[in-house]
Image 1 (cartoon, rainbow, N blue to C red):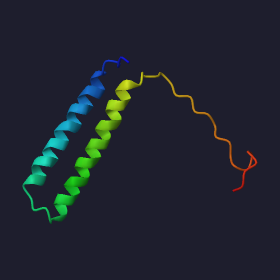
Image 2: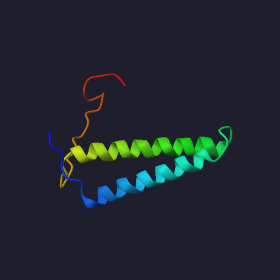
Image 3: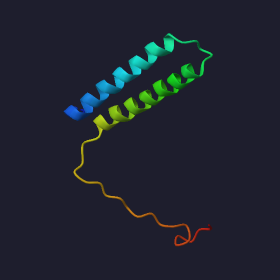
Image 4: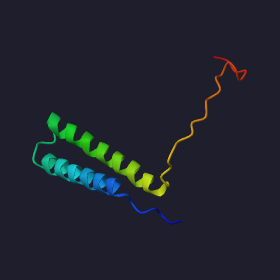
Length: 82
């Protein structure tokens, strides 16, 4: 499977997220593990990782000029119980 080349915006965004994650990791090493700031930085690092995961998955999906959303059928109209 071939992946699409990364548009400049995504590439720049990925680089910025990597920079922010690296900065947070450096700051986290400088403070005690028992501090609240340590835990906040840990959460930020995890969030950066999640964003990077989404962005890298988005590279595998071709860009679509539009998105088609199908309406969902409600449980009541489908004969189900609410």
